[in-house]
Picture 1 (cartoon, rainbow, N blue to C red):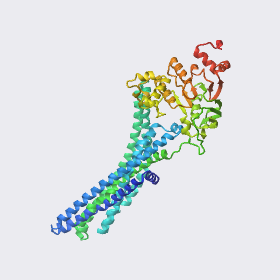
Picture 2: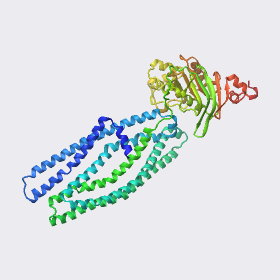
Picture 3: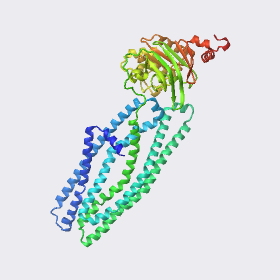
Picture 4: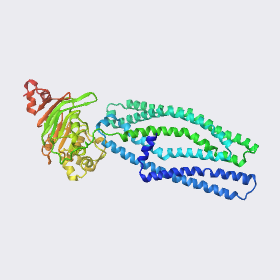
Length: 580
């Protein structure tokens, strides 16, 4: 708990720290003001009512009114400060966490579910805000109210005060028992919340797949199961709290009974005046209420601790793929690529084994092979989304580990089959990687990707807002906008991972012709299954089971009569015995 509070404090800007301290001091001062009106009530009863002396009545009532209004005014100012401070901390944390997410590597996103990350960025962060805006001052309020009231009552009548606070150790034992058992339940409930959010996020993101397979009822039941598990975990905590709460209430009511019964006996025996009994009855809540709130505060503290631990895990997490301390500053990338005996594995599973090839600047390399063979992993290693387990991946004769990540990836344009378009205009999506593009340049890259014609027929042309993942566009249209986006950064290396799989042969031929005549030097890395997409490449790689099974030009691979030759015969409907 201490680490979480220290972490929150460190993420609060200095001016807000000072205001937060002032707010907590105001909380302490307003707790002291609580003692004034009960003291005045004693005078009102003993010096006015019992003595039948109305002279000081108006002055006492006026002071009580001023104290009440002053206290409420200070409390209002305190709450404003606390709310402002908590929002400042959450703003800082949300900004830093989002920055962390931007620079985390691919392995991090492989290991973390989107729904869980969204829970950390929303519900968990809100509990951190709730601690600063409410929980911490309520703890101080409860502690100071109990302390000040107890000390004051001790001076009024120490015997009655001891009788009131003798119940406190019993309350502490019950609270300790509750705290011990409630924390693991909050951790469990937090996981169920994450699972529920993940199920909702996946369903919303995959709504087309759900509808395509008519699985609405299945998804409804699946979400209901996750939601019910979250509800049940919440109910288990509430049942524990409902077991704990009656014990607290019983002991709190016992304090009030002791006050009335014993106080009455003390008045009869002359040890207490009616006014002093009024002080005890007026402040008995100040002794009992903090005890009553103790359960709620423990409840909230455990929820805060669980949520803050999840946020801190994200905050202090460090990506594995970072700039090397001796990373070299480069000029514009030339586009030379070389893999030297590269192997890559995830845990104990081999993905690539002893891969070697080289490509000169401006050349085109094509990669094909069966699904799961390791084709996409090649481009992930080139862009350094992952680091090779063995061997070296070089760009311009420099290991990618010695490149600055921003510069390395800034020189590579990537378009994949699984296209993600942002909820932005067509122009905004194409210019995503290069915000300095003019509209004419955007149009030129759209033309080279054969996207200009259909974009101009959209309701607002390049200003048309396209939905998340390109809703409203066909698969081929989305791919062409993604290709235009990759070209718009004027890359030295252009990676196309099945980029033209959803376009027709005529469009594919047009795009290939445009790629041959780009206005900037560019090495092209094409992953495809169509022979037509790769036959003109300077180097064709056939990747099978994580190894390069064949490499060469179109003509050389046909002569080898291996996987490439078989694929060629199948795609062109040529009997293998007649193929040349």
